[in-house]
Structure formats: structure tokens, C-alpha cells
Length: 542
Length: 34
Image (cartoon, rainbow over all chains, first blue to last red; front, side, top):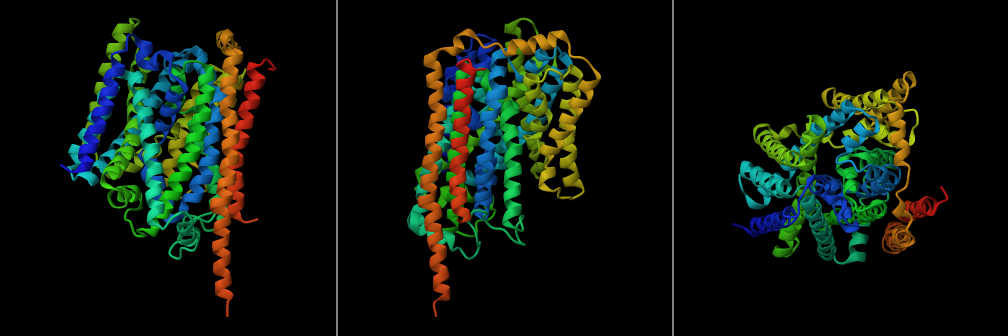
């Protein structure tokens, strides 16, 4: 048994122990679904970031950075992060105020519509089951690579890990394990950066080498590697791609169920706003660190294949064994945390939103646990039976909610004219609009221009449908009454001490923004320019 | 000004702008200007 497998098993036991501890405190349905609506800012930040950053962030996007597209990932993240702010201020805090158990339940109550609640629940079950399969495959691939276990055994181990702590403790356990995992992968990402930079000869030396890197010219320039061999022919192409994808993923973090459902667990609306700021800060820094770290690995090994395994290579070759094992655990934690959130949401929506739920909370709690077992078994069987080369199916599963839910979510808070039918057909058309745009690309091998990204196409179709259908009908009085009630601020929210504490977060964002600006100018832009100027002078020297 | 310098400044500015926006919204909403 190698050190990576031992570390993996220990970390799994740790998560199960946390789940067991949290599960003992589950006394009722609110505890299980929304962690008793008592989660602190740290826990909501932890679960927001851990749910968002899955294996895709540590494998796919770091692979892109290694290949020379890190700067575009950074630009995209800068825009994407603002989705947290917009989402929390204009949707999340009102969602919290509704005191729904699930986001589909909020839609159902807002429009007095059982069919809308069921539809939203169904999109969760379909979309997140696909996404859960993708994450299960992703995590099990890493386990297979570092432990040499057979593929089926890795899948079962991974499934057992996330199902174990999710089943017993529900959201109470998921927020705790997510936060532990968030702290783990954030810390090991920083430690990994240190070792990568040291192996490149220190900060300024590695930066100079990367600035002049001949095999991948422009590796850390503001636009990264562009040209005929790249997906982006010119820097402008890359910039437009990063900005548009940033907006698209900003909508994902603003409205998707695996992000906004976290706000239902917040202690109050101040925690919603504070945690959105915290998540924005964490993502802002983590992506900067990860993108630079992955690019700098080129100095140690420029030919890692596949590029997505760059951090696994770092763990196994650049870091001391124990720290390398911790890095692998951190990457796995990123996957497991997303998986546990997805599994819990599928279970909650199946029981609470799709089927007619029991009015007895004890029965519903039992039914939800049974559903989670059923879903978990179904997912592991699908992962074992289906060939993992159908991975592309799952690629569009996550962002589909931005198209399906985006316009409905914001308009449910801010529009007086959106009707139940408008919301229902808007959600349905956005869902299929997104999938159709994806299928066109996959089956006809057509690369749509970036401004026709499936997220944006689906969102536009959804918005158009809502406006058209709503203009043909009338808003139900009960629906408008619910919306007005959402805009009534709870009495205890204008407490001066709480407001002052909330204001600390935007102030921290401002200070951090200035600090990042100063650090990037002095430790990135200026030495980068110096290296380029020095090389230009050398070339012109007779 | 180089592209790298613009990237450095604008990346920090995004966070500054986000902070200013949240600060303004919280003041406006919770302190009763809305």
C-alpha cells in the first residue's frame, strides 16, 4: 500500500468522522436540508468555493495554464468572481429570506406552482447526476493513477467516501466537510506553489525564464500562448473569450443550485453577503496562484502528458512525499466536496420537489436518506457500466442551470410582470436551448463563436421566452404578494453592529484589490517587462 | 503601458470595484436609503 493510498484512506476516515459528528446533531428536516439555517460565514465560504472548485479546476484548468493559457483563466476568473456579488445581492439574500428548503421549492412558492417546482427539481436531478458522474470519474482517475488500484475499485472507493458522510449528516455534514476540504486544498495549493517556484530557482529567476520561454512563447504574457497552433489566433480573440466565458460562469455562480442553495443554510442575510465577498476573494486568489503555479511547472518538466495531470506530477515528483500525498488529498478533496454537494441536492430535490412528499418530517427525512442511497447506487453503477469516454456528456451538465434558471431567478425577485407560465416555459426553453447548442457542437463538429456560447444562447432563449409568454398572461395576486413579502426586510437585519461587521468584508475586498495590484505590478509586470527588454537589447547588440 | 501592466492593475481594480459596489449596496439597503 503506497503513501498516497494511505493518505487518501486517512482523509476519507476524517471526512466520515466529521460526517458522523455532524450527523448526530441532525434532529429535523431543516438540519438535514439546510444545516439548521445556522451556518457561519466561514462555513458558507468553504462550501461555496469547495462546491465550485472540483477536479475540473485542479485538472482541466491547471492543464490549460500549463499549456500556456493561464492568463486567460485569470481574466475569466476576475469577471466570474463578480457573479458571487451579483448573485448574493440580487438573488441569494432574498432566497434566504424565503426560508425554503430547496431552491426549486422557492420557485414553486414564488409562483404558486407545483409544476415549476417539479421542473426545477428535475433539472437538478438530470444536470447534477451527469455532473456527479463526471466528478466521480475524475476523482477515481486520480486515485487509479496514484495508487495503481483497478479502475472499478477506485470508483467504488470514491463513491463510498462521499456517500458515507453525505447520507448520514446531510447538509450539516456537507458544510463542515466542504470547509475542511476548502482549507486543505487552499493550503496545499500555496505549498505546491512554493515548491514549484523553488525548483525553478526562486521567484524572479523563474519569472524571467517563463517570460523568455521559447517552447511556449507568451506563456505568462497577458494573453498567454496564441497563434495558429492555439485555440486563439490573436490576443484579442483570447481576451474576448475570457471576458464572455467570465460572464457566462458568473451567471453560473450567481444562480446555480449547487451555489445558491448554500445561502439557504446561512445564519442570516448578513452572512449571505459576507460569504459572497469571502468566496469571491478566495476564488480570486486561488485561481491566480494555481494558474501561475501550473505555468511554472514547465521549468521543471515541459512535456507532461496529458497536461491535465500536471499537479499529480508535481505531487509525485516535485514535493516531499508527505506533502505530495497531501496535495493529492487536496485535489481529491476538491472533487469529493463537489460530489457530496451534488449528491445531497439530487436527494433533496427528488424527495422534496419532484415526488409528492410526505407531510410528516420524520418520514420525509427517512425518504430523503433512502433516495440518496438509491441515487448513489445508481451513479456508481452508471460509472461502472458506461464507458468513461462519454465524459463529454457531462461537460455541459454544470453550466446548464445558468441558462435554465438565470433569467427566472433574477426576475422572480425583481420583475412584477413575470407570470407562472413565463417562468415555467422560460426555465424549460433555457434548459433545452443550452443542451441543443452543446449538441450542435458535439455532433456536427461545429465550433460556435464564443458569443454563441451555449450558456449565453440558452440564457437568451430563456429570457425571450419569459418575456413573450408573460406578455400573454396575467400575474397571479398570490404570486405578486409573495414577491412583495420577499422585499420586506426582517426587523433584526438593520442592527448597526451587524451592518458594521458586514461592511468589513467589502473593505477587505478593496484593500486586497489594491494589494494585489501593487504586488502584481512589482512582482509580475515590472520584472516581466525587464526580462523582455533585456532580451531585446541582447538581440540588437552587435 | 504594457499589456501585463494593464492586466495587473485591472485584476486588482475588479476586486476594488466589487468591494465598493457591495459597500454601497449594504449602506443603501440596510441603513435605509432604499
